Image (cartoon, rainbow, N blue to C red):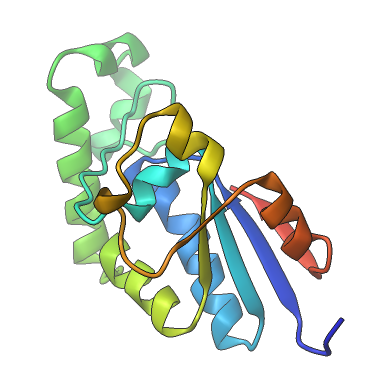
Length: 160
Protein backbone atom coordinates (compact mmCIF):
# COMPACT_ATOMS: atom_id res chain seq x y z
CA UNK A 1 0.00 0.00 0.00
CA UNK A 2 1.34 3.43 -0.92
CA UNK A 3 1.71 6.38 1.42
CA UNK A 4 -1.00 8.20 -0.51
CA UNK A 5 -4.34 8.29 1.28
CA UNK A 6 -7.29 6.70 -0.51
CA UNK A 7 -11.02 7.42 -0.52
CA UNK A 8 -13.59 4.98 -1.91
CA UNK A 9 -17.17 6.18 -2.47
CA UNK A 10 -20.24 4.16 -3.47
CA UNK A 11 -22.85 6.33 -5.24
CA UNK A 12 -26.28 4.68 -5.36
CA UNK A 13 -28.70 7.55 -5.87
CA UNK A 14 -29.52 9.39 -9.09
CA UNK A 15 -31.43 12.49 -8.00
CA UNK A 16 -30.23 16.08 -8.08
CA UNK A 17 -29.90 16.38 -4.31
CA UNK A 18 -28.06 13.06 -3.97
CA UNK A 19 -25.70 13.85 -6.87
CA UNK A 20 -23.82 16.50 -4.90
CA UNK A 21 -22.30 14.48 -2.01
CA UNK A 22 -20.18 12.02 -4.04
CA UNK A 23 -18.80 14.71 -6.35
CA UNK A 24 -18.15 17.26 -3.59
CA UNK A 25 -16.47 14.67 -1.36
CA UNK A 26 -14.43 13.20 -4.22
CA UNK A 27 -13.23 16.55 -5.58
CA UNK A 28 -12.31 17.74 -2.08
CA UNK A 29 -10.44 14.53 -1.32
CA UNK A 30 -8.56 14.73 -4.62
CA UNK A 31 -7.61 18.35 -3.86
CA UNK A 32 -6.26 17.15 -0.51
CA UNK A 33 -4.12 14.56 -2.25
CA UNK A 34 -6.26 11.45 -1.81
CA UNK A 35 -6.38 8.83 -4.54
CA UNK A 36 -10.14 8.72 -5.07
CA UNK A 37 -12.59 6.36 -6.73
CA UNK A 38 -16.37 6.51 -7.04
CA UNK A 39 -18.26 3.28 -7.73
CA UNK A 40 -21.61 4.11 -9.35
CA UNK A 41 -24.27 1.44 -8.96
CA UNK A 42 -28.02 1.14 -9.42
CA UNK A 43 -29.58 4.62 -9.69
CA UNK A 44 -26.21 6.26 -9.12
CA UNK A 45 -25.39 5.37 -12.74
CA UNK A 46 -27.62 8.28 -13.77
CA UNK A 47 -24.79 10.57 -12.64
CA UNK A 48 -22.52 9.22 -15.38
CA UNK A 49 -24.86 9.99 -18.26
CA UNK A 50 -23.71 12.53 -20.85
CA UNK A 51 -27.06 14.27 -20.78
CA UNK A 52 -28.09 14.83 -17.18
CA UNK A 53 -31.74 15.41 -16.40
CA UNK A 54 -31.62 15.09 -12.63
CA UNK A 55 -34.64 15.92 -10.54
CA UNK A 56 -35.33 16.31 -6.86
CA UNK A 57 -38.47 14.96 -5.28
CA UNK A 58 -39.88 16.34 -2.05
CA UNK A 59 -41.99 13.19 -1.74
CA UNK A 60 -40.25 10.79 0.61
CA UNK A 61 -37.70 13.45 1.51
CA UNK A 62 -39.10 14.94 4.73
CA UNK A 63 -35.82 16.64 5.63
CA UNK A 64 -35.96 18.87 2.56
CA UNK A 65 -36.31 22.51 3.66
CA UNK A 66 -39.23 24.06 1.86
CA UNK A 67 -39.55 27.71 0.85
CA UNK A 68 -41.89 30.01 2.75
CA UNK A 69 -42.03 27.54 5.63
CA UNK A 70 -44.08 25.17 3.47
CA UNK A 71 -42.72 22.23 5.47
CA UNK A 72 -44.74 23.58 8.42
CA UNK A 73 -48.11 24.05 6.70
CA UNK A 74 -48.04 22.19 3.36
CA UNK A 75 -49.08 18.54 3.78
CA UNK A 76 -46.51 15.94 2.75
CA UNK A 77 -49.16 14.29 0.61
CA UNK A 78 -49.38 17.58 -1.32
CA UNK A 79 -45.90 16.97 -2.67
CA UNK A 80 -47.38 14.11 -4.72
CA UNK A 81 -49.49 16.54 -6.76
CA UNK A 82 -48.58 16.26 -10.46
CA UNK A 83 -45.98 18.84 -11.39
CA UNK A 84 -44.58 19.27 -7.88
CA UNK A 85 -41.37 17.44 -8.76
CA UNK A 86 -40.73 19.93 -11.56
CA UNK A 87 -41.53 22.85 -9.29
CA UNK A 88 -39.24 21.59 -6.53
CA UNK A 89 -36.45 20.76 -8.99
CA UNK A 90 -36.64 24.27 -10.43
CA UNK A 91 -36.62 25.82 -6.97
CA UNK A 92 -33.60 23.71 -5.93
CA UNK A 93 -31.67 24.59 -9.08
CA UNK A 94 -32.41 28.29 -8.55
CA UNK A 95 -31.32 28.10 -4.90
CA UNK A 96 -28.05 26.35 -5.85
CA UNK A 97 -27.37 28.93 -8.55
CA UNK A 98 -28.18 31.89 -6.30
CA UNK A 99 -25.74 30.56 -3.68
CA UNK A 100 -22.99 30.06 -6.25
CA UNK A 101 -22.92 26.27 -5.95
CA UNK A 102 -21.31 24.56 -8.92
CA UNK A 103 -23.51 22.46 -11.17
CA UNK A 104 -23.28 18.67 -11.17
CA UNK A 105 -21.68 18.83 -14.61
CA UNK A 106 -19.03 21.24 -13.30
CA UNK A 107 -18.31 19.12 -10.22
CA UNK A 108 -18.14 15.95 -12.30
CA UNK A 109 -15.70 17.59 -14.70
CA UNK A 110 -13.63 18.88 -11.78
CA UNK A 111 -13.41 15.33 -10.45
CA UNK A 112 -12.26 14.04 -13.81
CA UNK A 113 -9.61 16.78 -14.07
CA UNK A 114 -8.41 15.79 -10.59
CA UNK A 115 -8.13 12.17 -11.77
CA UNK A 116 -10.93 10.79 -9.65
CA UNK A 117 -11.62 7.33 -11.05
CA UNK A 118 -15.24 6.64 -12.05
CA UNK A 119 -16.31 2.99 -12.10
CA UNK A 120 -19.74 2.03 -13.45
CA UNK A 121 -21.19 -1.17 -12.03
CA UNK A 122 -21.22 -3.63 -14.93
CA UNK A 123 -23.98 -5.76 -13.37
CA UNK A 124 -26.29 -2.75 -13.03
CA UNK A 125 -25.51 -1.56 -16.58
CA UNK A 126 -26.51 -5.03 -17.82
CA UNK A 127 -29.50 -5.31 -15.46
CA UNK A 128 -31.06 -2.09 -16.71
CA UNK A 129 -30.03 -2.62 -20.36
CA UNK A 130 -28.13 0.67 -20.32
CA UNK A 131 -26.32 1.86 -23.41
CA UNK A 132 -22.58 2.45 -22.93
CA UNK A 133 -22.83 5.32 -25.42
CA UNK A 134 -25.04 7.25 -23.00
CA UNK A 135 -22.21 7.56 -20.50
CA UNK A 136 -19.46 10.18 -20.35
CA UNK A 137 -15.98 9.26 -21.52
CA UNK A 138 -13.22 8.00 -19.25
CA UNK A 139 -15.22 5.68 -17.05
CA UNK A 140 -14.33 2.11 -16.24
CA UNK A 141 -16.79 -0.76 -16.07
CA UNK A 142 -16.36 -3.16 -13.18
CA UNK A 143 -18.17 -5.23 -10.63
CA UNK A 144 -18.24 -5.39 -6.88
CA UNK A 145 -14.84 -7.10 -6.89
CA UNK A 146 -13.37 -4.07 -8.67
CA UNK A 147 -14.75 -1.83 -5.93
CA UNK A 148 -13.49 -4.07 -3.13
CA UNK A 149 -10.03 -4.20 -4.65
CA UNK A 150 -9.78 -0.43 -4.25
CA UNK A 151 -11.87 -0.04 -1.06
CA UNK A 152 -9.96 -2.80 0.71
CA UNK A 153 -6.85 -0.65 0.54
CA UNK A 154 -8.63 2.64 1.27
CA UNK A 155 -8.33 4.80 4.35
CA UNK A 156 -11.95 5.92 4.09
CA UNK A 157 -14.96 4.27 2.43
CA UNK A 158 -18.26 6.15 2.14
CA UNK A 159 -21.72 5.01 1.02
CA UNK A 160 -23.79 7.89 -0.32
